[in-house]
Image (cartoon, rainbow, N blue to C red; front, side, top):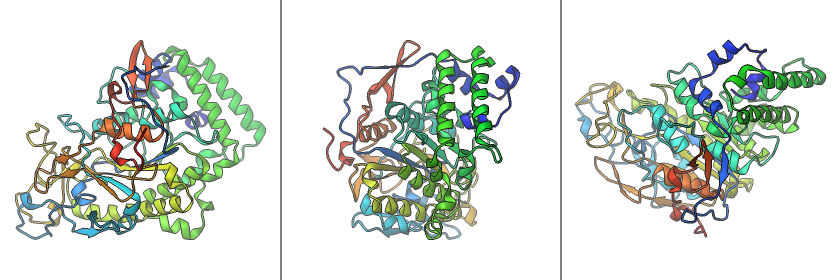
Length: 487
């Protein structure tokens, strides 16, 4: 529950609080006070930061690398085409970097690949029965669920360790993802939190970027005196509320601090950054391909205003968007129209404003996809494709429908990363597993943290146990990705 949701509520009874709180929220509130501890001498040390801000462009649902950033042998649709011959359903196209090709439909991204580092060897864990929420939890927190303590989102770690760039702007902003009514809402809520770190480091959720301005201003018609009085009453309610029955003192204080943070934003002129109507029409139109494009525009405005960590998602909803269990080719054609122009425009705009060097853009997904293999070769994961066919009979069967964890692509811009660089390699024929320079989630996170000057071995003590930003503090930054080798 964000402070802004608190603002819109009347006083809740104890029964209301317990009914509306998710199990993950209650587990988070029950935790004790986390204490930042010194890393052990044998753990990786931080290096000089190359970035101040992170934008995570999240392709929720499983973006197929062979259909996007790792093109393979292309087979156009044809009735009778054997399914096992299909590796990519889009042809490869050239980019502005001679040795990097991506797939048709991403022509705008192709034009800015000279500013990118492309990882083709991202490998995620095979968690058995593949559930998007489990893999998204693993990617966003670095930990495989379930955990005995509530693991913080990577954005919350960054918010806690670095704080805001601008005190008026929330350090962690989540754009484009609704957390209700999508089939896995409780699971999504489990990792879209600050976990044991406390509410003040949790995300400011903006599911609809076009309406973001409405979330950062007092209710219509409320004058300043009434607004201030309501703020005082709200804080008094929290102090005296039945939350004391389920929340530790630390988390109650964290909620109160998050209320103060909300008040600071609602009272600040910096909230104009959330108002897309203030963007010049030509610029707005360049981004506006829908919610994701608007989210990219909002992210650029928030970077200019001093945001620390921003996630912009195409939104994960079961069986929609990148979650292509059928009709994959047609869906990817639409999705590419939605993401191609805004991503390239975001990169160009930040570069033109001198902000790209200190802003790390990361485009990622929870896993890739394959036409024939669920998980990895030999996995016992249940086949979840809804368009099974030995041979193509109709277009709905054409596309990569199965979850594949043996490889995947991650695209990075700015933030001290090399430009025009290709890292890693996957097999040219099925199984399309990583065959060179694998990058795990732990090492990818270590790379992001290191770019920000955070040691991958940073550790908190929670409930008398160590909890690291990367599992056991062993994440290793991929030094080859940095333009200058980390010291």
